[in-house]
View 1 (cartoon, protein in one colour):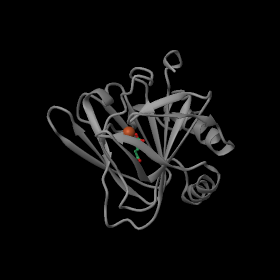
View 2 (view 1 turned 120 degrees about the vertical axis):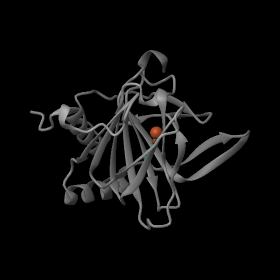
View 3 (view 1 turned 60 degrees about the vertical axis):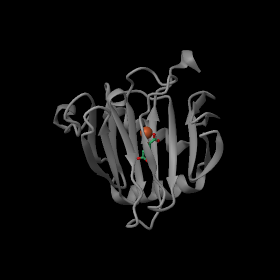
Length: 203
Ligand SMILES: O=C(O)CCC(=O)C(=O)O
Ligand SMILES: [Fe+2]
């Protein structure tokens, strides 16, 4: 049974994309439990990227899990996915039921405090299935999340609290950038999970 009527969930974007904010889908005590488990059981690594020809390592930590050992290339570095952990599988199932979509991989980010964020980008890599939904589940410190239209530059923000879910779908990635702005106000870590669908033919 799906407790959410999809039509009743507001779209945060005014045009050319769909970002559904499901609000808190995991009660706060359970979200706290998942936060601890994910901190302890995920194989966190500092992210590596090549920018302006320079090899850089981010303070933010990342991990990637999936159905198969997919290769995923972004920021000119390639990562290979690890097999699902029990916690990730149960979260994936919950998110799939609510969003009525299937996902075959999950990219995880660990931001130690508000000094760490993610700059403007869109998740439109060729390896992702075309126009597939990306479901983003957050644990730990609440953070602001922002969207900017690539042409009109219209700016939209929302807050992602512990246990909350948003889904970016349709042509959102083609038309809008998103980012996690850094902030001096947040002193605690946040974990974000983005469930994605890799195009198996392209991996
Ligand atoms: O941390 C977040 O909420 C978003 C992360 C993100 O945009 C990404 O992993 O592509
Ligand atoms: Fe993203």
